Image (cartoon, rainbow, N blue to C red; front, side, top):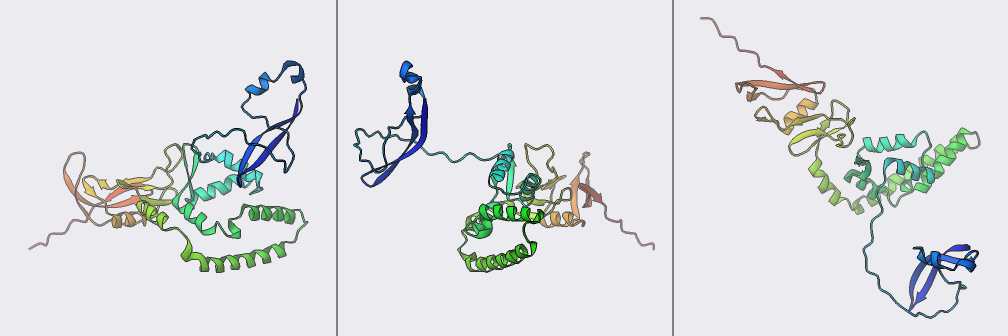
Length: 289
């Protein structure tokens, strides 16, 4: 059997309906064995028609259902899509993904890529610009490959890039007030950046009960696990004290800290690499009389 894979568009009362299926051009073995197997296949068989041909609607069936959003990508699938659209090269695609993870535009949960609020704000800002176009990125990659092969001139590429950059800056100034990012800003307030992680350099964020590295991922054993509980030995660590810790400074004096023996003591806190250390206040000298 031979057939054409076909999309058939039919107009009924000015509404357009799309049918996708096969148009059989030659029955082959089905001349002998019939169409039973073909009829059991899920994909429908379309009649042979000509463009502009008038047909009669003999039956209408209403199927109720819900559309499903596209499935989210894994990192491997994203690399495949990037390759399909000539984004990056075999040597750089993984690095590009790592870069946007580091910048917190995406996060990985259970091997699935999720766009963060920061990433959504970036998409909103560049979605209608040339720099947000995968096609432009692909053209750049092809041109850069041509430069590497000596077929294209680097000077013209640099000059064109300068002009494009200036154009994008001017457009951003004009469009900034129209960006629909208020909802993203409100959502990001729940993940307030405190400072830089002493272990990996990524932002440390307020996670309600702890101050933790934004690079932590439950499903990644190699991800950064730096965190400091907001309640430490019976005393609360304020945001201002946490900022001091991340800046390599001592906190203000914390009074009434309780160790394992339940005996209270006073101390400053300071980070030694990514571990909290105690700095005890100097005892005052008693004047001799």
